[in-house]
Image 1 (cartoon, rainbow, N blue to C red):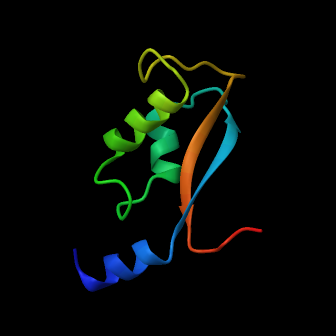
Image 2 (tube, helix red, strand yellow; image 1 turned 45 degrees about the horizontal axis):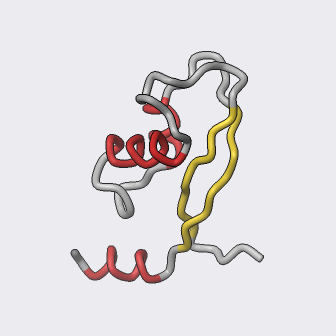
Image 3 (cartoon, helix red, strand yellow; image 1 turned 180 degrees about the vertical axis):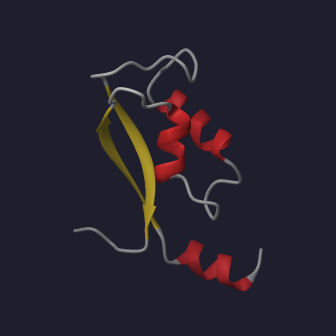
Amino acid sequence: LDILTIIVLQQSFKYYKSIRIESGDTLTSVAHTYADQVHYENHHKYIQEVVYMNHLEDADDICEGTYLIIPYYSNELLK
């Protein structure tokens, strides 16, 4: 790890939020929005975590109108 990555990791906080799946959403599109390269080595790792957290059978097991709990990182400590 380079020094910048180490600093970002030390100053980031993991949070969870609920999102509503809209028409055309996929876990890949969710990963593009919420996964970052510092905390996830690739989008597949992020998708695996979302599938596991939401007890999905696989990455295609989502449909419009349902809600998912997803992880994300922020450098801000939320109160």
